[in-house]
Length: 118
Image (cartoon, rainbow, N blue to C red; front, side, top):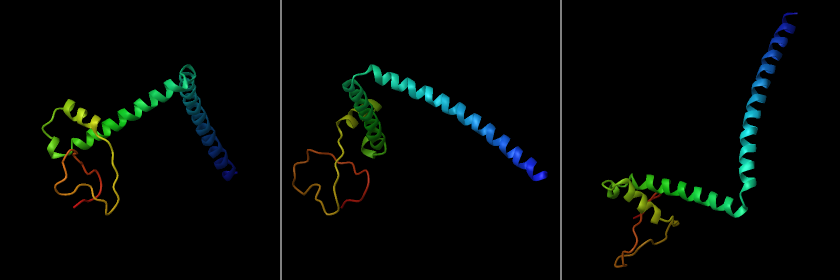
């Protein structure tokens, strides 16, 4: 009988857990339906444009956070850093690539985010 009681108690705990999970699921579902309703009113073009703008804004914030850690930019205002971040683009180089050679015209400023250059 003792083991039966333990099993019953365990079942009650599981039932409470299930109720909590169900309540969370219902809450999450309402949020998902709100988002789906939002999508339903947008054209695919508007949705894509909104998503691209969001991605660009996130990329801009990320690039600005990188610039804030570069000594050259330490004295700049937040607006100046954001302006610089907006003009940045990500460029990838693989091991052995030449980024710039001596006597090249210096029309580009590179910030090394990751890796090592010499």
